Image 1 (cartoon, rainbow, N blue to C red):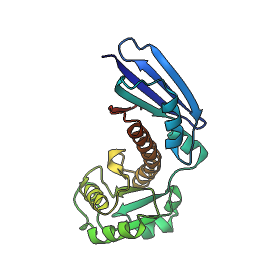
Image 2 (cartoon, rainbow, N blue to C red):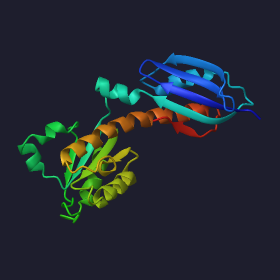
Image 3 (cartoon, rainbow, N blue to C red):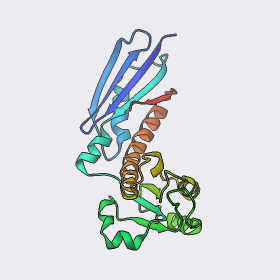
Image 4 (cartoon, rainbow, N blue to C red):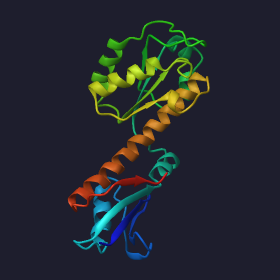
Amino acid sequence: MDQYIIGINTGGTYTDGVLLDYTTRRLISSAKSLTTRHDLKIGVNKVLNKLDIQPDYRIKLVGISSTLATNTVAEEKGRKVGLLLIGYDQELIEKYGLGENLPTDIIGYFKGGHNAQGVEMSPMDKEGLAEWVKNHQHEVDAVAVSSYFSPMNTDHEDAAFDIIQKHSDLPVVLAHQLSTKLDSIKRAATATINASLVAVMHDFINSVHQSLKDLEIKAPLMIVR
């Protein structure tokens, strides 16, 4: 049985799709539709329905790529992110205006964090963090977590991740996974920006999954970085 590959690219203006022969890489068909930013699934569905996918075709792989993240940064249209700072000195940040470097105003401060040797400064406020998530989860599209000196000890960020996952289905980004640099403000800002983009791509991937399901296409989904 012949095998095929579907490729989908969602850009700021158009969504493009191609159907390729897996063995020969020969182009079977291609399609284009306007990107529907308000509901990405609509544009993806239109492209998939335009492709000449026969009922007996075995789809081996679906590859997707997108400029949505780049466009989001360029257009300053990122999703709302809640930033959880563990072990950060709120008074110090406010006194020196460091909060201006954080790309969100939805911020929660909690006890915890570590010192430069990775030793816990104080127990993490797990109850307070859980309560914050319960109260704010409907105000944001994603959550970023940065614990003081987390590159030296990731325990509090890891614990925060488990709490957030328990009380919500929001995408979560942990600062130590993105940077090992010890600049606490830059690390928190980086995590916040990434969380905003993760929320955008999360919607895109879910839209593709739903479109494939509607067409009864069962194949692995590969994201082109």
